[in-house]
Figure (cartoon, helix red, strand yellow):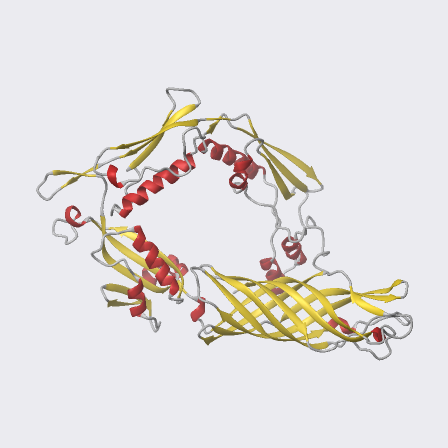
Length: 545
């Protein structure tokens, strides 16, 4: 029904066109295809097995109102329309990107192929020239830094094309090494780079210059410093932080939080919210009085996520103005930093949560053939080619404690199977057996340890299915295969939870095997060749919780 619901352009206005695809022609620059392709926006509507299924699902709601139509539109995908201004922005973006890669005199053109309210765009890049690297030069205003910096650029060698993004990466590498020495945020102006192409057209020297700054000591003397060292002064933690509430009314949100100081860390937590302060304190390696280092940030982030009580971790730093009386005076300890650690609510600690899902399936039969090969002209039966089906589910998840949760996923599953019956000369009859299941699965989910924002899991249980298509009426004298409507299935599968700020996305593969013989043999001329007929499904599911 969904796959054939309507044309993808059915609800477009006369002056609107659906963007069906695009093509990139980069001539001799195919190595840049992935990064240039990422600049194209918007992308056409997604295809699943060659069909724009999310768009067709969206169109299935039509132009009507109501909760069901709104829900269908929400899980579907609205049509991506052709927009001339967006095509121009894409063309300009490709040109700028290639210029950043060291190419100049870049010419990017776009051509359209339009038919029946559908548009396909072709982007072509030609007439380009590029600079090549002659030498890579590092200049240190303060010779103290030179022995501490490794001069080993990444993805840049003499003779290669000048790549400005690679130069940005090299600048970031230099900043990282300076931060390891205690120079937090060396400064946007602290490292400069340029391409000097004055000596030879087509070639240029890449010059990186590391500057130095003047600081005034307590005695009024100028002290040369290659950057600013930063020291952690305060650490503040926000367990179960809600960004949307904070963005809507930050002052009111902060006033609603309970302030607790523990192990030199100030906690801002919702009232009546229970959490393990000892575990969080032990995981935070950014302690007051310590010099800021990037390594401490990475380790703190990793340890906090391993506690499994945090959905995600967001660390922010605020530079404080020091005074002569300040304990953390710049000249002795570095510029003081205030560290704010926001711990977003974890799905794992909710007692119950809900969601929805959809997916695809293939159905089949496990056939137990009769020992005598059947009676009459029919000798045996087998399942034909697999067909694609579709299912939708609602989700109720109850946390049982530890790594287990109980899940109830009522839903609808649509699909069909091809059943072939053979006589002595070949295929005697082909039946397309349709099934529209009303299902009630009760499953147990076992979750592994969480690695950053990913967590694999296993799932299994039972599923009671009622086949509404088994009651289909047939005309008198019409041959058909009769199935029992009710069956109990065993299910087993695996998947991965991907955690985002406000949602958990879980792709899952699951196998479901029926326990009953679902064929009604009495009065069926084809049933004599089959002793038992068990149903099974293989499903690919996508859950949003």
